[in-house]
Length: 122
Length: 109
Image (cartoon, rainbow over all chains, first blue to last red; front, side, top):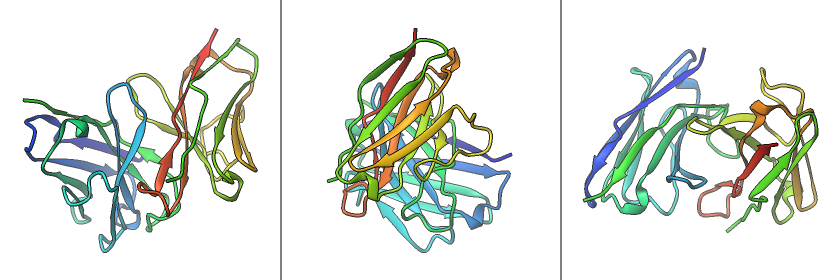
């Protein structure tokens, strides 16, 4: 059974940093691209970032480019999102999601984690 | 930037058919995917590549895509289908590349 379990969310002050993790199990993690998608309270889904299966290629939405860094450790079956210079508008539930292929382009998200809440407030 | 427009809400009686539209410029030339999200839960993929269903998704869920509109159809609606539904496409010219629709709340009367 495919499982994605996010962790690392919490309360952070504006301008602060936070690292999210997504532990994967039930599939060969190193064969799949992975994504982060977020959802502000009461709002719709917003795409954040992607990484290819081998970690060699990454993509960021303009809204987080230069502030967030996506990475993965295939030996630990874990996806990360390092978030910096956090703003109030970054407050959201962050979901990790699996791509059905090793390349993150032009696909969809076949499995999602349960999400982790990031609250940005002073 | 590519925009996907969905009706904010759709109401349907149990046993009837719900149709959720997703409008976008020439969306028929793209692959459209649909997600169901129940309150407090993560999204679940219900239709991919316009009309394919993942394993475990009932046949009551179907999709179509042509011209400027994609449609998710839920036949024989059940109380458990009450949720938010989002369409999604890939558009390399958009800021987010992966574009989500605005979302539709399906209410079962």
